[in-house]
Amino acid sequence: MPAEVARHHVREEIQRRILTGQSKAGERLSQQSLARELGVAQGTVRESLMELQWLGLVESVDRLGVFVGTLDAAQICQAYQVREFLEGLAARLCCAHAGRTDIANLQAIADEVFSLALDGRHDEMGRLDRKFHFQIAELSRNKILFRLTETYRVLGMTVRAARDPHVIHDEHLAIVDAIAGNRADDAERLARCHVIEAARTIEEQACNGNFTPMWVD
Image (spheres, one colour):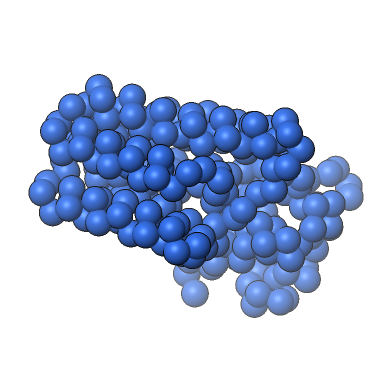
C-alpha cells in the first residue's frame, strides 16, 4: 500500500474510533499497538496522529504519549467559524463553473436530504447533506479550497445540528438558486448564513446543557 494511501487509511480509522466513541476522551493511543493492529509502520501511525492533533482530535503530552482529545461545543463552533468563510467562498466561485447538470444534481441532493430527514433516516441524511456541501466545494474548481474543506470537515461537517428540515431544505435550495442565477454575492451570503444558523443551534443547545454531538460517519 502506498505511504500516502496507508496514512489516509490509518487517519480515517483512528478518526472513526474517536468520533463513534470507540476510543474515549483521555485514552492513550499507543503507536506500536495501532501499527501492529492496522498492519502499517509506526511512522505511518505517527504521521496520522500528527494530522489528527492539528484537528484537535488527539493531544500530545511530552514524555507521556498521545491521548484522545475532548471535543466540546466551543471547539466545534470554532470549526464552524472557519466553515462559514470557506463555504461562502466556495458558493461564490461555484457560480462561475456550475453547469445545468451540476445545478440539477445539487437540487436533487437537496431534495433527497429533505426526504431522508422527514423519514427519520438521519444517518443517511447526514451523509448526503455532507455530499451537498462537498459538491459545491468541488465545483468551485479551487483545489486548495477543496483540500481545506476535506480537512475541516471532521469538526465542521461530521456533526449534525438538529434543525428543522424544512428550513434546511429552503436554505439549500436558495443557495442552489443563487448559484444557478450566477448571483455570486447572494450565493456567498446564503451559504454563510446557512452555516451560521447551524452553529447558533449548537451554541443554544450547549447553553441549555443538552448538546450531544451527532456524528456523521
